[in-house]
Image 1 (cartoon, rainbow, N blue to C red):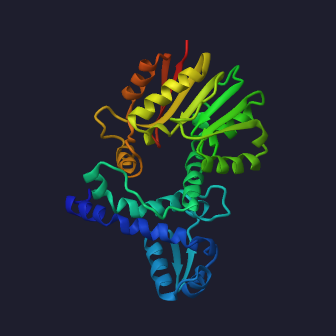
Image 2 (image 1 turned 90 degrees about the vertical axis):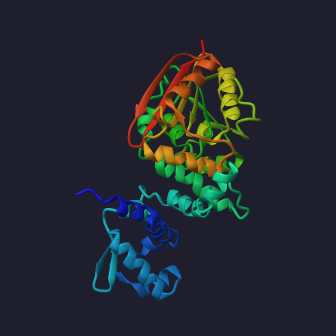
Image 3 (image 1 turned 60 degrees about the horizontal axis):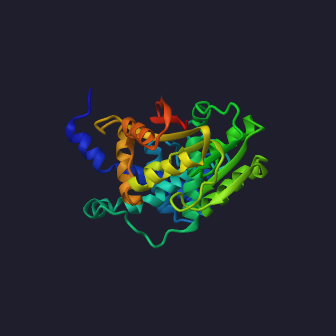
Length: 326
């Protein structure tokens, strides 16, 4: 039987309770000590908190089926352990910490809606930014192959990744193609995280870095492929236009621009997660927004790209456009 409208509304209204239970536990590194049955006192000691709130948090996690409880002891469910334990390659701890840091901002949504401006928070730390960049790898590592496989690198020698973040796609492309020379344009703080990932896989020497923001930094010239993945939604309409124009100028004749983005249907109501993400851009960017497929296609046409093609992906719903400079 379908949930009643009243229950739906009330459940939605307190959904942040459940979210904060999970995010607080992640930020406290609570799950790392739950690989065997332990009691609240042991967890409290490991996490440096009091026993009473530890017991309350553990019981709440058990009620959400994230933990198993036997008598007075708790164990992390094997279904969730790969994603919540730091030692697991599948962990998504950085992106969950990013959500934790955003919680305060989302509490100011009314302010942003009234002002049409992003919220400002003076106490943002460098660690918070690092978790954001590392969190991008948490998300993309599960779907990177479908994006990489959609990029034609036949004959490509010079590849520019704009807003590469943790260099997830660049790393995969370089591992599969020894003849490609990689270039990354990103903010200085982001390039430091990218360097860490590239070094771990022995790829650092194959990448040159262009440090700076997309609007004011020279892209360089002579690229066969330029990739802009999950960046344009954070930019103002003016900056998006600049990105397309500078990319067109930086490409060789016959070069291709790939744009990978969230997308919405033409009436901007589906998929819900992408529509809701627009409000995240209201909170955190000066003019950022998600796109419909027709909006992205028009940007390609307006800039002068030809042979425009599109690939749509589901779960998560993203779209990959490619256009050629002729």
